[in-house]
Image 1 (cartoon, rainbow, N blue to C red):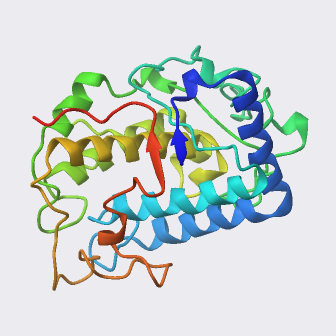
Image 2 (cartoon, rainbow, N blue to C red; image 1 turned 120 degrees about the vertical axis):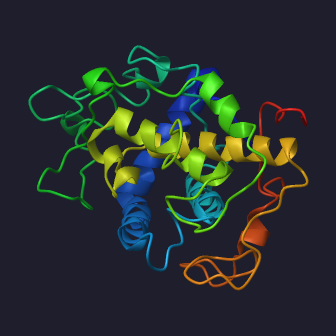
Length: 279
């Protein structure tokens, strides 16, 4: 069984294996297919039209499946690798170990955002940005620019306490747990982290930055905690809703996956710490 661990608890060997698997997928071209898929969906997911991966109830099951597919790709390189998660409520500064030169590398330089250390730096030559929003071919970051702060544990707890999964109109103006976690309402969790990292993470091609996967693994972990805390709160909407993915509708780009299929992650992986106790 795959066990996803807190990145701060990884051994040096686990970090090395994870990084090497990422570099192998980049080298053989499989990595960029995930970047392309994500960008296509974030560009087409709009409040007033068909939306699947973002701004919609299926944000969480869609990304759960997306991460499973990516984790399987990593394991095709090295079966020992699992996706770590980044708990940004605890590791919340630019000095946190996630940004060390032997792991993700640090922030970008001031003049152009280029990451200059670590395995994904332009100097190493192993991480060219091919699926991009501009002409720059290097990984960019701007960690915590402008005094931005990452979400706190208290803010996360506030969102986890919300008992309704989602509400009409099922987009970025909706109330409920999903939209507050995604970040279009309230304290803003998921979206704020993308902006805090900056660079490609603040764009549709955010998977260009490998930290994307650890951020979304933590978002997925928070969803699993919410599910445990609110066992009587179902995925919504259930059926007959235009422009969104109902409980048993197929989620593009897959032709065999529905939100209902993604509600229980435990047949695919577990997390190293137990989910929060039921309220």
